[in-house]
Length: 96
Image (cartoon, rainbow, N blue to C red; front, side, top):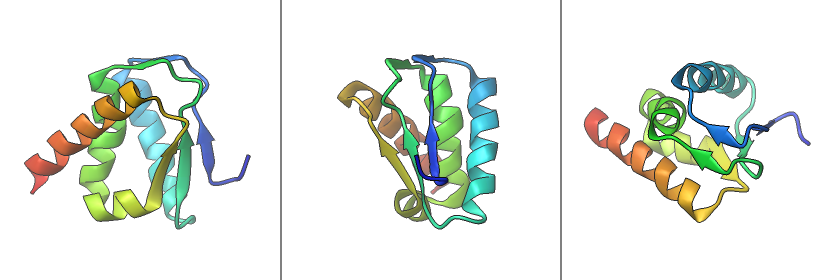
């Protein structure tokens, strides 16, 4: 695993608090790394609140275009992709 990789080991992601902590870690990594990868291959489910707090808020904070170019989500099922994309869309359309 590369230093730019963040692998989430939990299978069920639901806590807004843990998502907030991970978002802060990612923001810190982005200050020194041009791109990071978030590996969700172990994740089976994600709540809207977790997806919003991690991906939605992060995309609103740094901007949609920088988010799309700097944050790569790998190992993600179609269902997780839909939940994450919906929350990113909701946050970035509100920020626009």
